[in-house]
Length: 106
Image 1 (cartoon, one colour):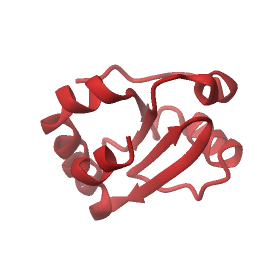
Image 2 (cartoon, one colour):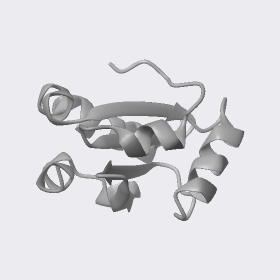
Image 3 (cartoon, helix red, strand yellow):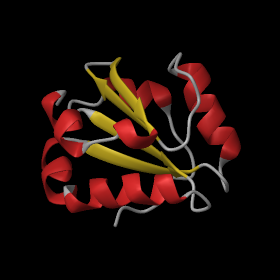
């Protein structure tokens, strides 16, 4: 499983050569756990094609909210945000979080 990220440098993420996948996860939410398990089933393929960041929205609510502001996205949990070439190119939340869909954007 991915390690939780405590802080995020948006400027650095936007400069990444590889696409970046941000997954906002709540350990208190069964839908979030299901979405995380879907991503973990595809972890090898996701890691091969992108940098993956895991944010604990309970422990790091301020980071999660700052990401929404900095990336001009709505805050949701669970939520996936894909950044490629410095731009947000895909977001999904709840049951719409699917590795196959994410991979098409990479």
